[in-house]
Amino acid sequence: MHKLRPDIDEYFLKIAKVVGERATCVRRKIGAVAVKDKHILSTGYNGAPAGIPDCLELGCLRDQQNVKSGSPHDICRSVHAEQNVIIQAAVHGTSIKGATIYCTTAPCAQCARILVNAGISRYVCFIDYPNKEARYLFKEAGIKFDVLDEPSFNPDNLGEQVLAVPAASFEKAGAFIGYKEKNEAYYKELLANIRYVDRDTAEKDDSWKQVIPYVVINNKDEYLVMQRLPRSGEKRLHNAYTFGVGGHINPADSTTDVEGDDVIERGMMRELNEEVWIDDLRNIKLVGFIYDEEQEVSRHHLGFVYSAETGSSNVKCLEPDKLKPFFVKKADLPKYIDGKENWAELVYHGFINKN
Image (cartoon, rainbow, N blue to C red; front, side, top):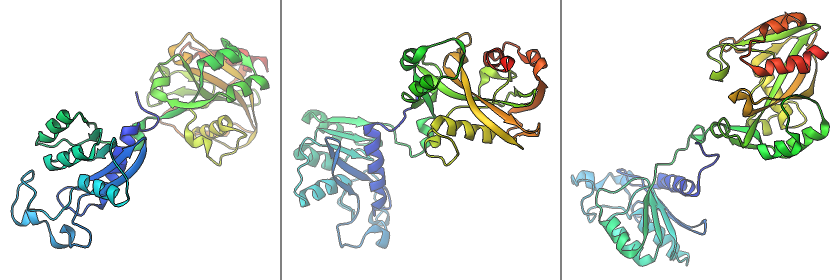
């Protein structure tokens, strides 16, 4: 399960990591942040005392004297990050008693002793220290010590966020099975309850219905049919024939300049523009909704059906490795209802065959 945003520990560890970029130690860049009630009290990083030439300028003294990492720190130009975070708080008259220290690295024994006397309540880091004395000191002093995973700055690690409606809101608005014709009040009720959720969660959790624009494209009595190829995203629909173009709505659709009266319409237009090129799009409008529980993939999605009328059959697929497009006479569409995608059958009987 992915998170929609960093939790509070990851948030402050990330800040500590950025603080460490200011370090003047060439061996290890360490950053520390003192936090209380989710408020930053002070920050510190390892480096030479203020106004004193540092290792970036003079070179590492420990390297020059061949001192191994973890050895006593009397041969070193730097003040440790944990010491500096206490010093900065003291300079500004701020007590760190009861605070949590977020640091990139576990403390040395000397820093641990100082932190015990400073009265901190917790120490959080993502790199443990070979010398375990600090861990024992914290245990004796009743200070909680946590070594967590290193925080990532890659937004992809948070997972894909998709627009969805809570199942409870779907029930309240008026749950249905099959095809439902457009109803302005129904649309507004759903729109008022949309939110972004983790896609991996929503694909398996029955308490969410992911919003999927489903655009039916036609030129007179010919309708666009697309076969989902093995490289298309949803494995459960590979090789199925679909009568609609569309996909998930993401946070980018909340701020995009793409035309549309709301985030659902903007998401619909983005998906349409990403998947197909239409030579002469004359009209596009919401016509109804689709929901089906026979297939697992359908149970977790709520379709918003749009009708797009074109002036020609000159429509090109922009994702030829995922979709194979072709136009089919309205009378021949049942040949492509093969049971693999229930939405195609529902939109055919509920909308296409009635128009």
